[in-house]
Length: 252
Ligand code: NDP
Ligand code: 8X3
Image 1 (cartoon, helix red, strand yellow):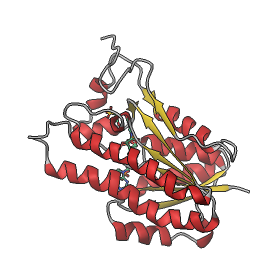
Image 2 (cartoon, rainbow, N blue to C red):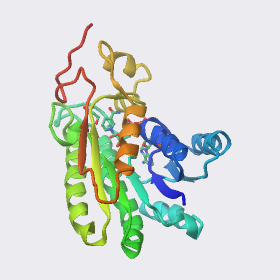
Image 3 (cartoon, helix red, strand yellow):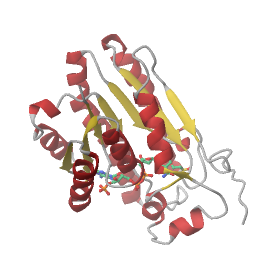
Image 4 (tube, rainbow, N blue to C red):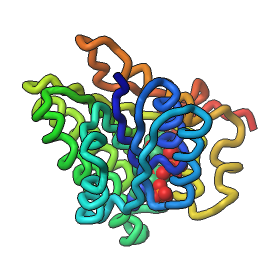
């Protein structure tokens, strides 16, 4: 029988690659994001090309009511989530603490921490009822190290690290697996969004080979497909040229 996965932030990058890969691997997938047209295109690709089943949900994960409303608009059979991939997130800005934009901070805190909590608070009780489920949080190397000009983004990803550990303890009595994947540099829309510059990727990923979204998707699939007695608690995954959040072997 097919399992159901809900992947937040599936309109691009890691979330999109994960949704497509899970769909190819026998999951029904619920994909979320704010860009309705892209959600429609990805759903069509999954249904037409991969003969998978896909339910797109368009909402802003910062809005708790909208998140609830979207989830409960799902047919009941789709509400039993086997795998929740908490991926929606972003960095906004790269500025020192005394100069950064307050609205960038609000956006990161509201998306990366509060949004993750809103959807988890809806999905996890249903997993508890069924005593089954798996939650994979997309953290970051920024959740393990702090770096200059990344204060609030690093803080939100440190929060994801703490939440992953607490969630694993809270959900342990119910047989629910919780883990995280913490990537270094992945070439997605991330840097375009962070630097508010469509050309940003050319500079950020110059001189080394960054990870691709598919590298993260493959690892998430691996985590999700371990036997029942195995839970991968955390994966730090880096480009070979990256040694820490800020140390890169660049050939420029
Ligand atoms: P992308 O910008 O390509 O994708 C981000 C996704 O999050 C999009 O689908 C976007 O959808 C969604 N999203 C953002 N804000 C909201 C919101 N308010 N409501 C709903 N959905 C939202 O970046 P990545 O794929 O790289 O990022 C995915 C995750 O990976 C993030 O949590 C990021 O922090 C993390 N990460 C990324 C790394 C990298 O180097 N790329 C490294 C480590 C971690 P839409 O715009 O349609 O709403
Ligand atoms: C994204 C990786 O190093 O830009 O989470 O913070 S980094």
